[in-house]
Amino acid sequence: MRRAAPRRLWWRGLLAAALLATLLAGYYYVRHQVQLNRYARRAWATFTKNGLTGREKTPLLAGYSVHGIDVSAYQGRIDWPEVARNKVSFAFIKASEGATLRDPRFARNWREARKAGVLCGAYHYFQPNRDGQTQADLFARTVPLAPGDLPPVLDVEAANFHDVAVMRREVARWLRLVEAHYGVRPILYSNHSFYQQHLAGHFDDYPLWLAHYEVASPKLARSKWIIWQHSDEAYVPGIRGVVDFNVFQGNFEALQALRVPAIPAAPAGRSSPRPAARTR
Image 1: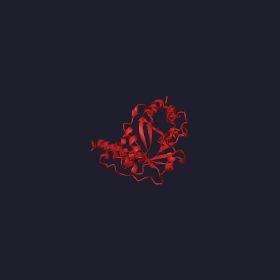
Image 2: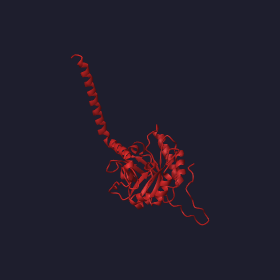
Image 3: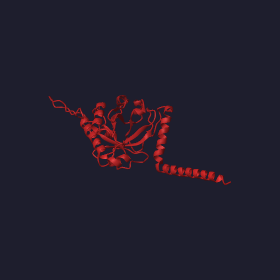
Image 4: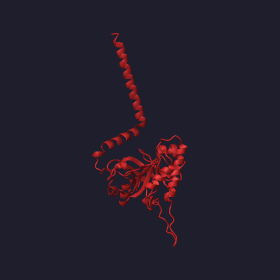
């Protein structure tokens, strides 16, 4: 009988550890359940992607008249005429990332989306460990923005930086150079938490495209943002798998007013002025 005592103590210790682990896991889930549930849904959507038809449809967000998507190579081959038939008014297409990466599907997406009558813009994913000049050059070499296109977008959300002041300086450099190149003010994209922590108050002169999920409306004054990315797990006919869903704060005419302006006609005998052709 005495020899059984150590075994009972061992089992009690194991049960206590299991109970503690369960309680800690429950506490973590309660605190982060929204994000964990989103990760689980995204993982399931990726796992079941091959079983989708490309005709699945998420209802449009009520209260807004202008809806759009943003895409990258992740979405695969897109049926843009089908997308356009499903009340997608605008699309932002990934063009580049960091200092060297070009999205392999950018050229096709850009050509086919515009052909389908979707109002298009392009975005660059900013890597804070690379300088803004190099990243601006890559974007300018990749994207043939023309009058009538939506402004260029800088996606700033990567947190792999050591000095926030340096990150802001390089973001400002990209925005300044790209505006000079295309002759239109870029749009700044970020998610709510990153924007509030690192960007708020530093780039207020630029239109803001805000990502904020699982909320009835963004927790940021309406005067601060123009586009709201309200979901990153929507379904749009023409795309096999999930895609980001966005709404524009305003009517379609207001969205059109943001487009790259036409080059003014030059007086007789003079050439038309153009935006700078290089970022250097």
